[in-house]
Length: 186
Image (cartoon, rainbow, N blue to C red; front, side, top):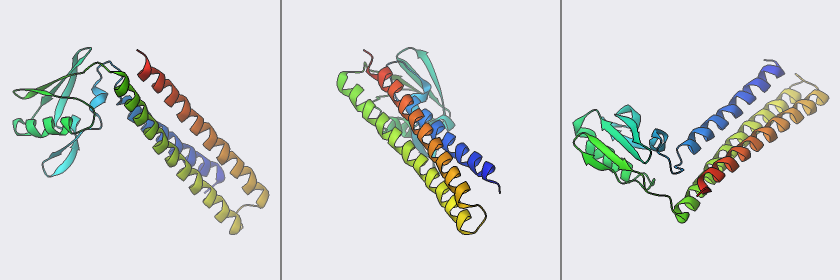
């Protein structure tokens, strides 16, 4: 396998970490209702853990209200319990096979805790990126040791991997700063 394809693979994996981070922070509430808020919720259903969107429809009828329409009547209480226990600060109201979830105003304390969660997501993404970097560096060292590439080429590729890592981590920091600003806006 060529070095160019190795670098493309590392870049793809780093981009995957950014995509996962974007998905994580999209689920953080910023005062507006969004179906993404319920993305982290999983339900014990049919003998396994399933994402909420695989057992119900999630809609946003009003700016500060979510509606969850559970497909299987027997799953309503499990869905309600999962939403209450999800640490999202939501209290669903059961209405037959539907759950109405009013979104409370975000107070200063809740905003600060959401920022902490965003920082945890960012750190998780940075760790994933560093793991990708480590894998890339290990591959370069092995290739150099095996005589596949020379020392100069190894050093040059190592610098490119480090530059890619730095750019990806700065992208995570930028996304985090934007999300933090969005959360803290009053």
